[in-house]
Length: 186
Ligand SMILES: Nc1ncnc2c1ncn2[C@@H]1O[C@H](COP(=O)(O)OP(=O)(O)O)[C@@H](O)[C@H]1O
Ligand SMILES: [Mg+2]
Image (tube, rainbow, N blue to C red; front, side, top):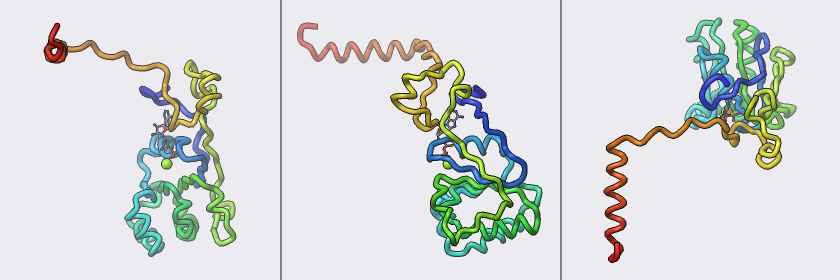
């Protein structure tokens, strides 16, 4: 684990631009924010961003012009605006900028009208947690019952509850007194 409740993923970023597919909740956005902390992020779940870029995909080119070509750009939920891939194609050709393209549905991108960048970006998949990622928390029974998608997986090693403070215990005592007072025999 790399931080409280966070498991280290096996996936390593490939060289150059790439698509990263995986079901919703597989941990794509989390992994990308950790691996590319300095990247420029365009989150297409942000509805105002999404609508603006859908109406005018050329806005992406203007936004990229303001960034140094060495700065990577993450487009999260790219299946929501496949037309942006034409701009991405132009930017890779023009400036060799690196793009990380996250998608929850490869099916929605694989239409004849979608530009899949013809080999300019490799394709990776992020799967639910695998045993080696879960380490000591791996539990086959839990995986059979709930699966191991990060969104639903709860770490087993919990932070122990902190000791109640004296003000907290006196507040609890006076609360109990008040509740007992409602019973005539107490
Ligand atoms: N490496 C990880 N360790 C622990 N929990 C994780 C990890 N990655 C993701 N999660 C959990 O899964 C949730 C969904 O992850 P997210 O990155 O939003 O998935 P996606 O972008 O694939 O839909 C996160 O809010 C977090 O609670
Ligand atoms: Mg996401």
